[in-house]
Length: 380
Image (cartoon, helix red, strand yellow):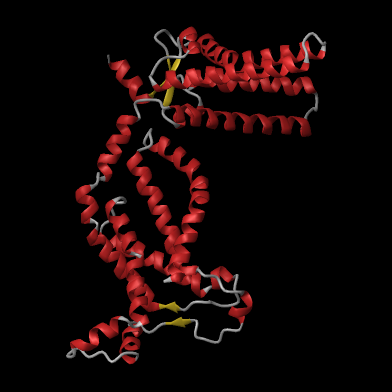
């Protein structure tokens, strides 16, 4: 029992780290496929991830030392099906006609181990049937594949880290684990009856996709900035190494690429950058979308939230360097500028939450909307 609790405790401890690594790809995939992130779906997916980690750790932990494993002489595999039944019978006084032998037999460690192997994959079968909507054959197949992966992990000595397997590759485990998945498949009627179906979750996601959340805007900006930066750096690198290392040429390339990516490309893609196209967003205006409106959109966005704070800090720095203001005053001045900047971002956040347009959107008459909302507006 202590081995089981140790494995689950390790899974819970490491889960936040794995979840953090998993989150960005998960968000990108969800926004690309569904246009929004469903809370129901997130709970299901992250609980499934925690389950898989727990199951895996229950199979491989605790890890012995390499020296201990190298000295093992016990068999590393069992290929006799249902060997566990003969083992239970040989290690107990079980008799089908004598009810007094039933309870002592249940206390046999081999019985515990067999029940554990069944229970281990019951949640897997439930997840496959309920959320992934697999039929019986697929559930059996994928459960078998999962347990085969576990057994190969054991047989290979944790992928050849150990000189031999430190646990037995057992065909009975394949049978019992697969049986657990089958039981889980039939138990899935419980969540199917009381929880939202996959179709209902998808419909909820599509409905939420009409709005452009703060997170979706942030992810769109991140994807666009990464694509823009990768192409820009690659181009400058090639120019620097194979054409000319002139600073003016590099600056010129940067300006040209910026104009192309953020101004020309949206016109080619009908009001979308690559990031917007990936996340099913687009520019929208109550007037005609033109290049100067997009310029205005980006200019005022940068001017209000980046240029103004930098200009204020730089002005204070110049005054301090020329001894027009004292060091203490400059420190207080920097705190005030930082507080004002934070206040501007908080106001912008609140406006986003309440669906109000921001200043640069009002000035440029340009905002971001989803493709679904654009379609609805076009049909009005």
